[in-house]
Length: 427
Image (cartoon, rainbow, N blue to C red; front, side, top):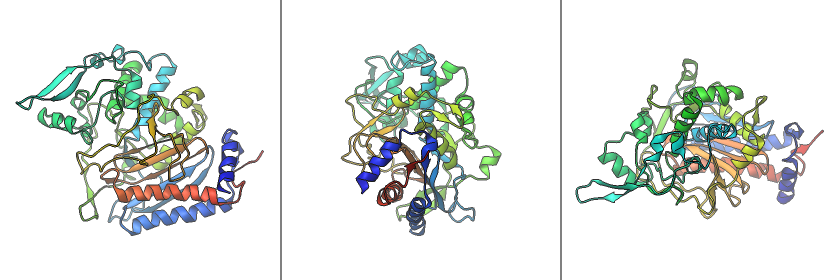
């Protein structure tokens, strides 16, 4: 039955968005299952509040929220709650860069230094001398936009790279969340194209977008992505209307309990972080996800060409593979490894699971997440996408991951356990 269900969904996935219908029997089953997952997480203290949703190319199969925006406060979490989405900024920045590739103003494989000269004089951090001074050498090969988009550039994050963390401490390099441009001026940890490591390369993509377009990153987004998609609550700076719906940030202590904290992210940065700077809502981000599902079209606007979305939906780093990220700063993150044993690659914007995931997610699906435990996935094979968003540190916290994976499992179980034909082609 489950296989027949998947066969039907794949067969209908290529039909126009208007061809999908979602009968109440299926959505009722999904609502009951997903609501239970979210409610249990709040009741057990796994999260203060969570907003989650599942969509098709033109419908919402599920939308729900449980808990509070801020622990101890009365305002309820909902899909219009404003949250710090951190690295969920990266796919939007990647889409911006790919728009400029379409227009011939950026190139995937030409030297990025042709647009931002600073990227032509990069050094690689090799180690340390006897006086605790960094040993640096010239990078081999030319850094490209492809390297930056796929995290094969050599740029890393101190959260998961001990050597870079040591460099930042000894050289007084500020963190990215400070908004200081000096945070970008760090050495590479390896030569471009030689391995994969998650890092601040997408912040440099943001710099390329600004240089190629002549606009600030926020203005570029507003004119070309978030504005046309109707993402009115997505911005680098929290507006007054957004602030009235802002969730608090939380930290899980050693005792397992959550407390409210001030993350300290500045609102007047020297640069707008294409890698981790945006605030948004679940409802807004669903509009971006639906655009990807619809081959670049959203809100009546063609944001990306279908062939560009196809290019962004497959492995773009060859034989290299995504690897585990061991934490160096447990305050911010636990170890990060999604679906151990399932090979994963990186496209021009997303993590790609090359095999089927244990949650039910199809092989070839797209995904990523944000530091404050916001997660999403896009399953092109079945033309569905989902997200679950909270506001808490550390990232990849097991209890929050259990919530996200439990929600995702409830989605696929509901889709696969119902009678055949529940998402069908009508005329």
